[in-house]
Image (tube, rainbow, N blue to C red):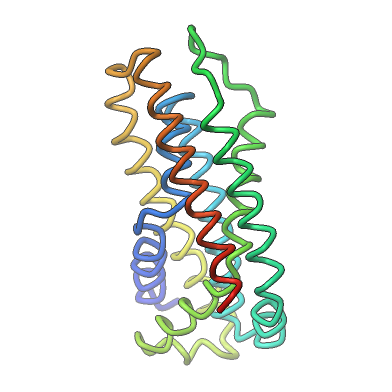
Amino acid sequence: MDITFLLRGLLIGFSIAAPVGPIGVLCIRRTLANGRTSGLVSGLGAATADAIYGGIAGFGLTFISSLLISQHFWFRLIGGAFLCYLGIKTFLTKPAEQAATIKGRSLLGAYASTVFLTLTNPTTILSFAAIFAGLGIASTNGNYLSASVLVLGVFLGSALWWFILSGGVSLFRTKFNTQGLRWVNRISGILITIFGLIAFLSLRG
């Protein structure tokens, strides 16, 4: 097994996840409102979707990638609508007076929602394909072991970013009182809604 594929995957996964977008805002908000576990699980949902798209690019599944990209209009429409829904819901959410107990069902919902949101941006495949080509990883075609190691690296690299982000944000959680969390909800809600509207505007392109 070529360890360089794992290291390259780590680099790719981390660099894809690091730019702060709607998932990042959602992760920060959930960490501040519900704790580090909720934020981390949300991030792991995005890491899972990154690994799926990385796998499509790494294994050379051109039929699937072409199909997803050709249907980008509907993916962006659904993703934009869901972002607007989450944004409005977050804006209107009142912070709890006491910390709520995070149940398995809540964590599953946090995980599933970020998997869904990340997958509704199928053009991410183009990013992976471009990075793979730029790093000279096109040679994984036909080598399933190397491709699998690469995809594992993508997941671990993305998960590492979400671990760092949720851990860092959780350090400031105790500094937010009810009023502070109310503003976190409002600002997060506005930002997430803006990302949703941007997704709608991109449909015109």
